[in-house]
Image 1 (cartoon, rainbow, N blue to C red):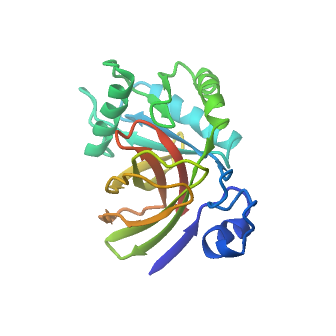
Image 2 (cartoon, rainbow, N blue to C red):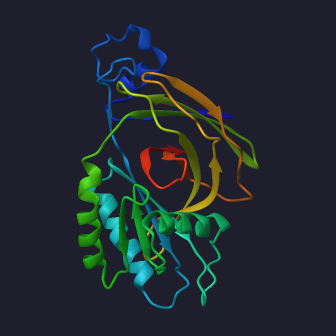
Image 3 (tube, helix red, strand yellow):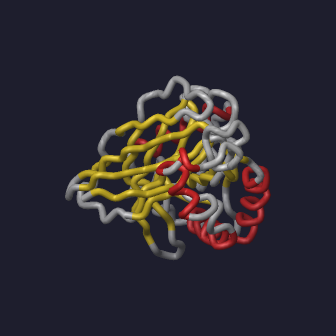
Length: 259
């Protein structure tokens, strides 16, 4: 079974025109990758590292704050949660990539300080740690989110998937907007399962990563078939697709696909 998804930043019709009928779009259209002034609003990716087995409520307070943040900005952000084991509490939703991703962001910031909950916005661009209350956590999240909501992106994403009972194979088409070439990039796809408890959150259960895209010229598109995501009986709800640098420190654009 194959599903097709077009990333939307204005309307479905315009998004479809971008990839299906570019030849019919005038060169002065801001949605056309061949237009040197083309750009998109950047959808912000928020990654929360948590351990909900911890007997204290700090992680749940942060997840509650993130719930509130998502209700305030439903079209502008995507929130995911990585569950990490700690020295004292083993989290059953832990995956090895959770720890690897966490360490990448600490390296990006030159930090040795670990602690949960720990939230990163657009990669290591912004960081919010701890939660004494959901209200204080929400306030600090909003403050950190402000500069990220003002960003524009020079990328668009189109996604197709082939789904079996056991795997999902993502095919991602990436377009470079604007008048300049891109730096080297990596595309990542997160397999998400939604949990509802004291706070609802989208848990990362598997990750697929592309090979390095060395360069995209202005207006160029490139299509890559990524490695399979393994379902392993997981009732997955969606995919989160995002573009990052080769060190995976900064996020340049993201989108979501419902399954």
